[in-house]
Amino acid sequence: MNCNEVIPLLSPFHDGELTPDEHRAIVVHIASCAACSQKLESIRRLSDLVETTPTPEAPSTLLTKLEQSLDSLAPRRRWFKLGPAQSRAAAALLAAAAVVAVCVTVWKISSAPSHSHEEMVRVFNEFLDSYEQGNPSTEELLARRYDGTLVNEAAATAALKRKTVAPPVVLANHRVTKRYVLKMPCCDCVETIYARDGTTSFVLFEHEKEQSEWFNTRPMVRAECRGKACCMVQLKGSLAATWPVEGGFVTIVGVRDVSELGDLIEELQAL
Image (cartoon, rainbow, N blue to C red; front, side, top):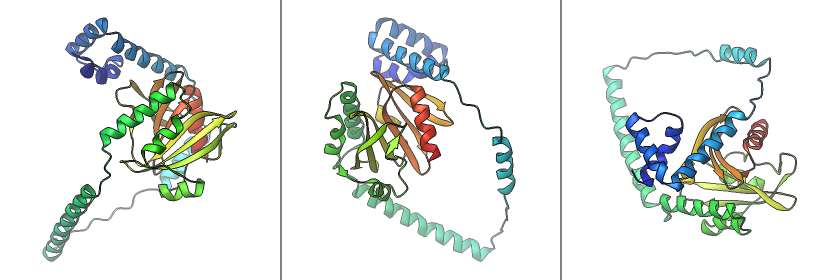
């Protein structure tokens, strides 16, 4: 097996999810490949961090509130049987809907941005590399590439078509320095840059769909963090992660550790 075949299997290898033949092939490969061995070690360290981070206890009233909510949402179902005339009308509507769907698909393809998804993954990894190196121009890299427009909190909310989850201040001392709307191939993405003591601390992205592929071949660990299913990546001296929020997803680059990530997730959920 070569590195391109091995890297996607490192996380399931670590979790013991491979077949015996695949497991043996990975063992043979990493024994002679320092790069893949280092990626596996990154997965192990990140997994250890997740496992050793304490899980907050649920409030004592949580179970009662859940039971009350379920009782109030008891489903009320009605079943209808279509007659021959209604069936023909429904079939005509479905056919018309299919034609509209095809037209919409063709329009989306013809009007798609010139930037390919593969290129977006490459550019985002350039951003991650630059962030790891401490390059002061990192925060402008994506803004230059994807027609970034400086916006305020209200304009960010308008671009997302939902309220932004990035407040002016988080974790007591991280403050917004800039917000950009980026015209990325996937969607209009909002990039919010935070600083602590005048130095960029982390960068928060809000987007429509999960974009864990932005991390490309970097070793990833999926785990639950403060009630959210997160995809986490170990960077040099920090973490990157992505998780769902109401109406979309958040990707964060630069949190110090799993504990700070959990505190951030918890604070954003409480807003």
